[in-house]
Length: 400
Ligand SMILES: Cc1ncc(COP(=O)(O)O)c(C=O)c1O
Image (cartoon, rainbow, N blue to C red; front, side):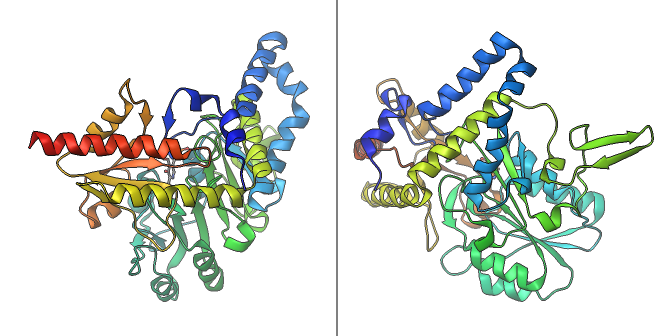
């Protein structure tokens, strides 16, 4: 059981805002803020390279922390500036060619779907969306049927979509992909720090995630996991003098570990900050975090559902902490603005048609209000949000 008073005392931002934008960027705990700020101070005092040298041991520990989070090995981890680039580095290195099929979910993020379309244009790959089951998540049976097609070369989807919805049954998906001998690239951007992620249990070959969302790390940081056996077979599309070494003027050698997907220059303070965020989450325990998120999100859904004009938009057998809804006769952008006003200071976000087009199209949605709950949110936070949405709904009814 988590100690809410400690969680909130650890999170200075809770004094200033009611934050339900954890799927955008969460509030950092003090240990993360201190780690980042202290390193920037060291850079100012000693010089950037010298400060990184002095922090060499702690920088190595970041790989150990990411590996612990995922039940992987440190040499299977690359630290990359965000989830999109981490995902890109894996995806574009895959030897996909004309006629190869990529299976994805309707909940795929546009940032990943656009690269599919690009390789469709450049290399002639094909994209197919696995149908949903009756509850709105990927149908594992439909996936298994499609995996009998020898043209399928990759299964690639997000564990949790940017616009909420189900926590996908990734262990069953991974088992099906493994059985068929097909690669599985998991976008865990919304999952890291939110739900338990064990790459051995999931069976994914590659996984990308970001620091600033449910992990509560700094912005501009993320990571990639590549299974050791696969890593040596994949040649990154981009190489630099960190990913590879020049042996002679006409020969280079690519390093053997997952850091072949990194580039040399990076935000060292943010890298240390991400390590601190992961250690903080691991110390609290991902299972207790996830248990609390589910309880809070469940409560929020129940209470929002009772408000006139509110329609909850989440589907799935297992729902995440990303609570989405629409309010009749009201733009999601207006709801966001109303909640953020000076008097309320409630942060939610808006998930748009463009960012998960297939899913939004299927459900006839233009956009949704996204209230993403984290473990440090309190019952008072939920009360504040519910009351503000209630007030807005009454205001609309009154104006009618
Ligand atoms: C499901 C999903 N995948 C990938 C990303 C991209 O993450 P980043 O902005 O760190 O590149 C996001 C960001 O919102 C996301 O929600």
